[in-house]
Length: 287
Ligand SMILES: [Fe+2]
Image (tube, rainbow, N blue to C red):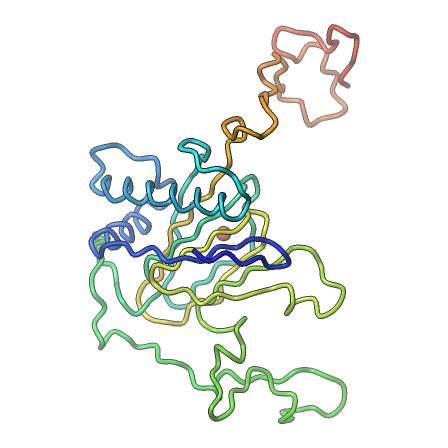
């Protein structure tokens, strides 16, 4: 596991090598039932693979928390939910962050050029003849900046032009099919975008962990076959981390319950609370 402090925010990059059998089973799970992967019954057809991945995710996230934040390894200090994301040619993930989660682990099951699905969600090899999307040439990638003056197709205002001997991905790391872009949400005073965003080129097994508040997205996937990831969103259960302030208390334990008018400031809540009035014992009032 390699943890790099960007801006500084610890982002972990590691590789999890799943068996081929497990990987295919999980791709099937992602594509067929990808909404809440860690909730499954023991007789689920892919239960053993999900369970295996769940255990691996627990270990890797725990290692990240220890290395990045010095949180001791404990068995039960993480709660998590996993979902899947899969794409074919033209797909992308728009910019977003994960509100309400401390961190995110993205594991790449396949990044294209390998598999296709049949109607039964079986994961099948992609034949060479089916690889119809070829690597676009540098000419197709060219565009021109709009700047003042007569700049029409001006050689020096080219965007994304790759010259002989240059590598597209090296020259433009924030571009390129399927690149994962992660961005510090704090604004930069100058050069706003390029210094606040970094790119990863995922491979099979690539596993990235980052805080949930970081904005991220992927570029449009322009390859063949399937691209599939499992995303594990996790929270640190602070009650179970020994040095964290505790306990936390759920407000509902106080007996105050939100009524259906809670967001309407014009409503008198006098009799809305469950079995109580609007006045607490010290006379405070919620209007
Ligand atoms: Fe995400």
